Image (cartoon, rainbow, N blue to C red; front, top):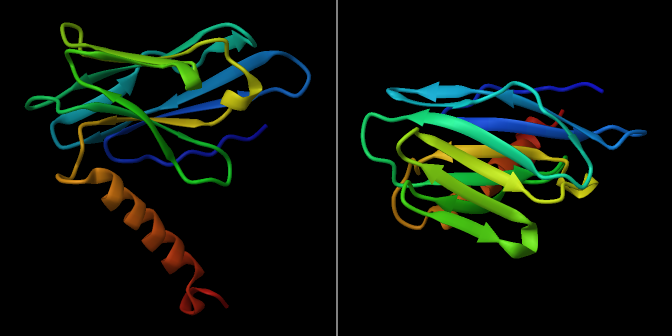
Length: 159
């Protein structure tokens, strides 16, 4: 199995891959930094048996207040999909996705718990520290993805 990762600004990457013959997950964690804000994983690898809960965690440090901490999931060959967000004073549970996230302001940590991990949870997970734009971030995010796809598939880029 080969893992490939790109360093990215203000994002925390978690790659969960399912091995073919064993019920074991491998989590590969990478970090990125920007300006005075940082976000880092607590561990570099985790091995989880299928059906068990898995907690993905990252510590963050900011020069100001945190608007929100956001989690995204990207399946192979697909666009990243927004999962949920929390601020430093709340937690969020999504029953349909078996997900729970909580930020702990005192220790500056955010956790994402995946309950009863399954093969379908194999994906790249992103933890983002506060939005980088204001206004309707979902609309802006979708347009950005559309723009990236358009530029990659435009006739001038095909040879």
